[in-house]
Image (cartoon, rainbow, N blue to C red; front, side, top):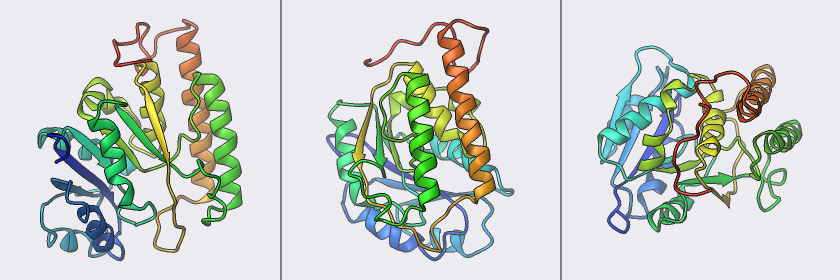
Amino acid sequence: MLDGKKIVVVMPAYNAALTLRKTYDEVMSHGIVDLVILVDDSSRDETVSIARSLPSTLVHVHEKNCGYGGNQKSCYRLALKEGADIVIMVHPDYQYTPKLIPAMASIIAQGLYPCVLASRILGGYALKNGMPWWKYIANRGLTLIENLMIGAKLSEYHTGYRAYSREALEQLDFERYSDDFMFDNQFLAQAVWNRLTIAEITCPTKYFPEASSINFVRSVQYGFGCLGTALRFRLARMGFGSDPLFPRKPAPSEGV
């Protein structure tokens, strides 16, 4: 709890047994997280049994793999059902440090922004922290194009460490998003469409064998998907056709 706001951390998990407990311990070390919700996407290791041994943790298991986006949909549904005021997504692979949870939660609790991204690019240490050079180049290139097409000024669209207010999750139609990795990108594009303000803070990250990552082929597919989302946004903004992600009249918002 922070400033009277219930804080729920959601963890979309897949084969995270080696790093889950370490991530959880750091998440709970701040004393402000009321509940952890772990959604397991049909892992083949001991992720579920470890998660069920952790206090203040709700574990939900998908009988079949539903994809990264499908996992997040379950995370957010459950968080809203549990009465969360602030929802923070932390990957249980310990690539992103949970030490930023108080800062991210405070930004939302104070009513400053409804969405907060932990950016690997801000601060200029992504490559020094081990991000592969081809991922860095792709990230910067995609972000430049997306900013131009969507009209935002984000440092990156591709971080997996995010915090949302309850109101943002209720306003955005995340059930329509992709069940794959495009979910995060579509979330931000629709947030901009609905004129939700987005904050960013710099975030150190780690790259090691246990950290989850998509391969080169999937990365290329993801990149084209991001460009497709940006194009859909631009066409909708110009008034061409009807797009369920970007309806003609943007919804009322908390800010521009």
